[in-house]
Structures are given as structure tokens and as C-alpha cells.
Image (cartoon, rainbow, N blue to C red; front, side, top):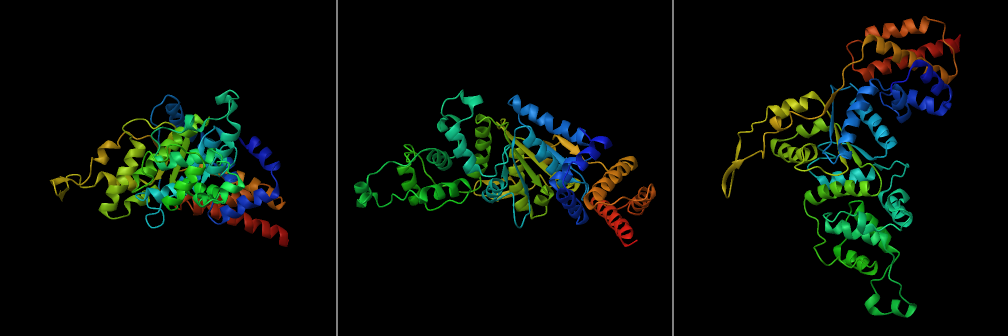
Length: 414
């Protein structure tokens, strides 16, 4: 729920100056801060309802997704940070990344997976998939396992890509015990127990070492099934399946699921038509899966331009191949995505800007320990809002903070 001014003032008064100044400094730079997100977000009720509908669908074993849409500067990044905090507070694992066709192309899902794991956050604050998995295996979730030791194979989905299923099992197992005499034998020259944890962690983080080295780790970590299938991972599909099955595994471990937050997702249409086609296929699998993906909750931030490009694609285009001409796009995404769950970010009303201005005054005065003249500062900020009426919200907030800085300096110098 949105904070009333009394509650907001009490929270600010109880917050240390370092935290408050960090918020002000980031707003001054046109950025945002986690604490600032938690107390300055507008329209929280609508965001909460949109997110909770998806969370409720997951509990019913239905597919879930959310698209946060708005023009540049309307607060999409701010909203995703708010949703990440809400997801964590309600028991979800989260990952928030920025999509960029040059640095983080969606079509290269191997790279996307690495980014998701590197930005992963668990409800207890842990940011390591490997450490969380080891901790869970060691202690178990007493609410799920009823005080029994955790059985890793019981929570790892059977359809997880073979390499990663073997890796998770190896991380959960202990090394085979060898005597000093056995260790000295040539046939055990590959027994390097100090390397195994690092090697296995690399695999789970998306950096696969040579397969022959992995075989040694699996052998000495007592993974009995590692020879049953190929350990190779080619293309983007194994990593997509890994994300899907990890979300299901998180649910089995006692979490609500895995919320994937993709900021600047409109960038996926700012590429050639061939790359757009590949991006659309992945987006479609996330937003409109053929069957529900247990525990997986993708959230995309789009501008309206994204949907305009999608609607205007040439879906009648044909591609020549060995089997003759085939449709260039597997489906008409403009038609397929008409029923998406979309939360539009509308601009703040004048009275909402007035409330935000009042909150900023509380932040600034508390952070820097000063008191403005009664009524004068509110009038100055109202004038700033009028002058910046046509600007993006982020720039308007920056202008308000700049005005507060000037007022503070005037009092200090006088």
C-alpha cells in the first residue's frame, strides 16, 4: 500500500543519514536507490495487484507473466526494482537484468543465463546459487522435508539438461574417500578435490570447463548417472530449459518461484529482422508457453514502440530453404500477444506530484539537517513542476532535488 505522509515521515525520521543522503544523491543523478524505491514509488497498489495476479496464477499451476509498459522516463526501471523487492518479500527468488542488443542480446540465452545467475537474489539476501544450494542440501527445508535430510535428486526436475542435473548432484555429494596409498596411484591422478568445487560452481554459473575434467569431478563426487547422456550444451535452448527447470526446483525447495525481471526489453526490436525473429521466439516461450512453466514468472519492461514494431512486422514474409518456402516468422506475434498481462505506467497527477514534492522535502531536510522557511519551499517546488511540466518524470525529480540543494545552500550561507 502507498504510504501516507505520517507513516512516510516516521520512516524517514527513523532512517540513518547515510541512507537518506544516498537516496538524494542518486535522485540528483537521475538514478534510484532501493530504499528510495520502497518509499517513493507511486501507484503501488496497482503494481501490487498486477504482480499478485501472476503470483496467484503460479500457485494454481498456471502460466504467469507481466509486462510493465510506459514511455522513456516514466519509471519502468523504478517499477521493476519495486517489483523485485515485493517478490523477495513474498518468498520469490529474483534476478533483474538489462537487455541490450550489443551487451546482453536476448537471442544469446547462454549469456542471458549467466547474467541471471550473477544477479540472483534469494529472500534471505543470499546472492549465490551455489552457496544456497549447498546450504539447502546440508540443512534441508524443515517445512518441506519434515526434518529429513534433503534429497537433491528429489527436487531436481527430471527434465533438467543432463549436464546441470549432474552438476547439482555433484555439488550435493561428497568426494569418494581415498587412502594416501590410493591417491598416489596413477589411476587416481585426476583426483583433485580442491578443484572440484570451483569447477562445478563454474558450470552452474554458466561457464563450462572442458568436459573431460567434468567427468573426473562427477566420478569422484559419486554421480552415478553422468555417463547416461551427453554432457555437451549447444545453442540457447539448453540454457532456456535450465532456467525453466531451476524455477521448478526453487519451488520444490520451498520458494514461491523465480521472478525474472528484464529491463529495457524494447531493445530487442532495435536489431535486424533476422535477430528480431530469434528474439521473438524466446519472448514468446516466456510469455505464452505451450504449457505452464512451474515457478517461472517473467516480467518485462517495454515501451509502446515495442508493440508497434511487433504489430507491423511482415508476417506474410517467406524464407527459401531446402524444403521449399516456409514462413519467416513461426507465428503472427502481433496477434498472439494481444492478451498479455500489461501494466501501463501513467503519468502522475498534479496532486500526486505535490505529495512527492513534500516527501522529497522530508528526505532532503532530514538527510542534511536543515529546516526550510514555512511555506516558501513548497511554492518554489510548485514553480519547478510548472516549468518542467513537459519533461520526463526522472528529470522533473532531478530538478526538484536541484531546487532543494539551492534552498539548502541559501540557508547555510545566510
